[in-house]
Length: 268
Ligand SMILES: Nc1ncnc2c1ncn2[C@@H]1O[C@H](COP(=O)(O)OP(=O)(O)O)[C@@H](O)[C@H]1O
Ligand SMILES: [Mg+2]
Image (cartoon, rainbow, N blue to C red; front, side, top):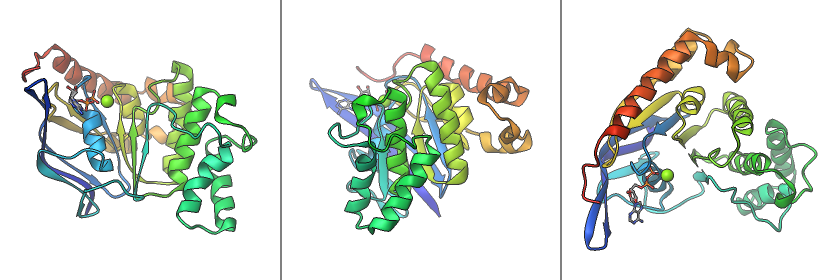
């Protein structure tokens, strides 16, 4: 059974007495423990898709289901990591992660082990007592990701989580996230407009059309990654040099570029 399902999902927004068709008949299935990235031009409805899975937004037509149930509201089975580091500024790193685990009713011992584990995996050991303002943007986002993973939700939703980071930090974060997902496979829906990032991270990449957003094509990255053994590479730079990587990246890049050139088909 698929973990996330979009069935003929359309979404129209009313604005200033005109309507904007943001999404048009989106169909997509994401398997349990699969990592899927959505790329597409600005305004094509990526965030709207994610918000629908989160239960913060709803289709005008069609349906979104998670684990076989139609999404009607947010829930603890789905954790969201936004672009802006949404940490509690008055709480330490430790407490920022702990608060969700407490809410789940986890026992103190289990909470401690869980927090330590994810802090270690995200290279944050030693920063337990720091407050968000004492950390760089990259570190704050690592805390947000550790927090989301520690909650152990069935589905992780990330909306351009590295969008606010500088290029070097971003690469480090991508490496950390790859490490984390290889150790802890989870169902992830990851939104980005960065093509390379989508290819590094995802098992499949969904390319969307310009507005109204539709699924243009779906690329099976995992098949290529496994065949050409990208996981043997120590660093992202080494993956970037592989011919199989370059081929995929260029393919997606061209596919997206066509969409940037396309006129908007809906009344704005
Ligand atoms: N609440 C809203 N009200 C009106 N229009 C919206 C709303 N949310 C999104 N839109 C419009 O829907 C389209 C898709 O938005 P969004 O999902 O944020 O795109 P993306 O994340 O791909 O940039 C855009 O044209 C945006 O202006
Ligand atoms: Mg967006």
